[in-house]
Structures are given as structure tokens and as C-alpha cells.
Length: 380
Figure 1 (cartoon, rainbow, N blue to C red):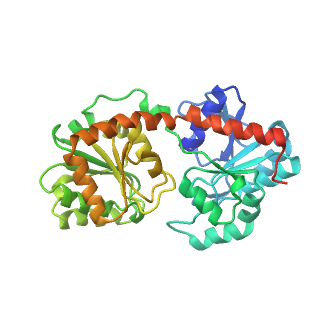
Figure 2: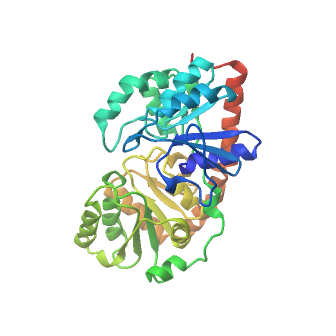
Figure 3: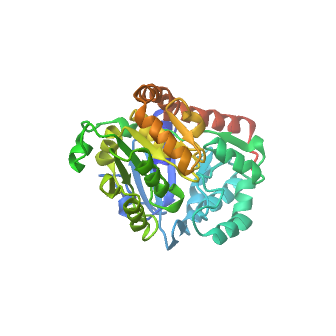
């Protein structure tokens, strides 16, 4: 299960709700570690922290699009035991298929686009085709649509979604990020970064939209003599890391830009704990989970105005600038040179992190669910 779905499901289960997650079977790697997996008439089933997960057999797949015929068997046999269905993501046929049977059963359907409503990065024609076919009915007949930022809410309204159907609920911070933290200094020791050197962290997929290239040039301008810029994340576009490495060489900071590749678990936590600043000058982020995780670890952040999380953190846990060279370089120089500002923003991280606590945010979802069940579904 994706991180967000797992986090929301766990909290709902802790609050006493019976939660089932229906998803496509993409192989054993997606199953919880050490989970007991059993066969059912519709696929495989596991339990994790009182959350039931059902994995439907996948007969064909194209990227995130899967074909799972047994969803029909599941809906006919099992939908009647549920009160409400919450669909996450777009551009598949699993969600619309379940929503179709929900309408027949009179069950409310909540749809959470997860930043996918506006097609970005790739497959623009296919995504437009989805909106014109199954997507139109899927969204129009949903009882509620969840936007995870003010930015996404505006996009939904501009796309024809009635404001009354939209619930604004931010993404939360998974509590796992703060559990069993490694010792501070472990990341710096592993990569031989001196303790006194400023460390700026970028963590995300290496794709043009994230603008790591802009960050490299701004770093070279703002801190020409010292500091380390860590670029962490998987290569999301073939050859893009090589372009970033060339950018570092051309900017004269190749020896102070570290490419680590993807970081997971303790390695990821260690990077957050040892960073002085987290930076993401992306051209578009529906919410931006990585800055939220950095804030949870007490790291001041620098993000662009195109990140959905920006209104939550501006002047409180970080700085917000347009994704352009001059303002980004100026903000970096300010953060690196103003220790009192960094201390104040670091202190503000705690308040922002508390607002992004999943228990609090799931409470919003519970109120939404209860209201839909009390007043009936509007997705007929």
C-alpha cells in the first residue's frame, strides 16, 4: 500500500473502524514485511495493524494502469458489508469499476486524486482520454473529492468540480519517520561531510520538474566557498542524473555536490537529521511530502511557490520563493548566513508538524464520512 493509504488506514483502525484496502497485486515486494499471506477467492489477503489488505490478481499492466477482472467478483460478493468507499488516485480502471458497483449498492464514494487531476510529466494524451471516458463519471458522481492542498483545490474548481464537493485535507506526516531515529552525525560520517560544514538536502525523484539543476546553480552562487549540497533520489528520467552532474561541473561545485541515489529507512532519516536546510525549488508539487518529513525532523525548508505545502510553512518553518535563480539564491544566502533565522524556523517546525499529524487529519476524514452516511450519498 502507498505510504499515505497505509498511514490513514492504520489511524482509522486504531480509532475502532474496520478498514479494508483493495488494491492490485504487483508482486510480493508490496506485501508487509513478515506478513502472513493467505489465498482467497478474489486474490491474496494480508493483515497489518488490524487493516485487511486484499490484492487482486493483475492480468495486464501498463505503468500504474492495471487490469484486475476479479474486482467484479469482489464487488458482487463483498461490497454490501461496507458503509463507504474511499478511492485513492486516478488514471486506472480499478477505482471507477468499484465506484460503478457502489452506485448500484447506494454506497457513498470519496475520491482522492492525490495530485493527479492535472496531468503532468508524461502520458498527457492517455490521461486526457481517461478524463473524457471513465474519469468524467468517476469524479462527477463522487460524493466528495479530497484536495490535499489549496493549490489542488483551485485546480479541481478550475476543472469544473463544484466547490461544495471538495474537502481540503492536507497530507500528514507518517509517525514512522520519528520512530527509532538513528544517531545524529551518521549520514555525515558515512559520506565524509565535516560536522561544521552547512549541509543542504534535496530529496526527490530526479526529473526536470523538481529543478535540482536550478538548486545546484543557486548553491554555487549563494555558497561559493563552503558547504555541501546533497542530491538524493532515484533517477526518474533516463540520463537526467548525468545532466545534473554536468551542471555541477559547469557551476564549479562538482566536489561539493553529492549524489547519493535513493535513500530509504534509516539512511533517509539520517539525511534529514544531519541537514541544516532542506530545499525543493520544484515547478509543481501538489503537496510535497519530503519537506513535510524534513519539518518533522526539525529541519527548516526552502520551497517554491509552486509547492502545495508552501502556505503552511511560509515564515513559520521555512522560506518560500518563486522557482527562479535570483530569489532562490538570495533565500539560500539568507538561510546560510542568518543563524538566528534558522533557529526561529527550526522552532516553528514543531507547530507545523503538529498540524500535519495524521490523527488530527484523519479526524477530518471521520467527520466527512459521518456526514455522508448521515445525510446520504450524493453520487447517485
